[in-house]
Image (cartoon, rainbow, N blue to C red; front, side):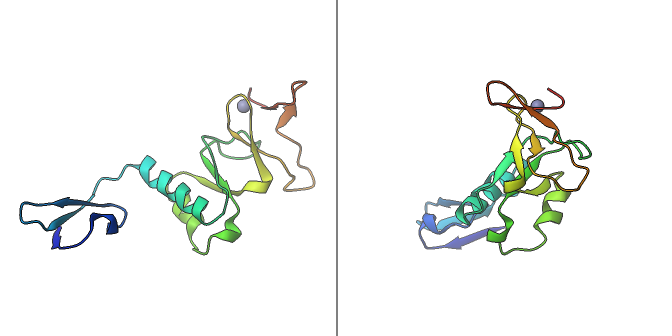
Length: 136
Ligand SMILES: [Zn+2]
């Protein structure tokens, strides 16, 4: 889809490309192929703007959890619903940032606070005060 309109290029919404043509009009083209990385990067920017302090982990090293990417944040700061499902469809887990931290070695997520009575940490503190997960 191409829309012709006289206006500033700075007004462009995300995912739209604008070019000034020979007719001095801005020609808008929808950017159809946004990579998954770009989508997640702009979602992380959105969370930062909302003050949700997001953390992205490339995987999960917690016992009993699937090893897949995790985005942890303060979700109270984000008004939108269905984010968990939206992330789940992309193979990403949603967690709370005050309950997770990163392994110093592989940077995967480990739970820092219990989620049940029988919970045991999936990490150890090293003598250098680093967190190392059960897999490292
Ligand atoms: Zn690790």
